[in-house]
Length: 56
Image (tube, rainbow, N blue to C red; front, side):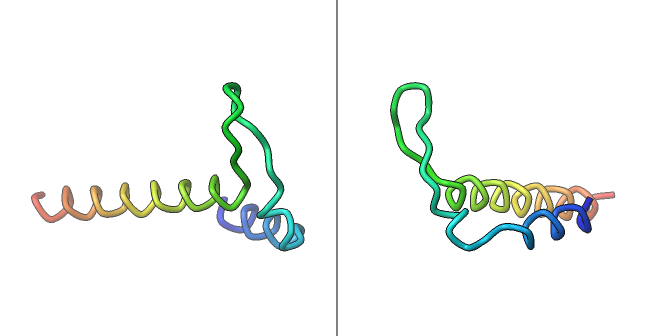
């Protein structure tokens, strides 16, 4: 999964991060926003897993 992600990201130009789209209700967003929140969510889950493993 990691290799595939790195391959896909390396194929993108930097301006891909700033391509704007709109949610259904018209709120704008870009790929930078989406990628940031995916990574933020991943970090949060890693912290949760670390905390759970400390209790076992």
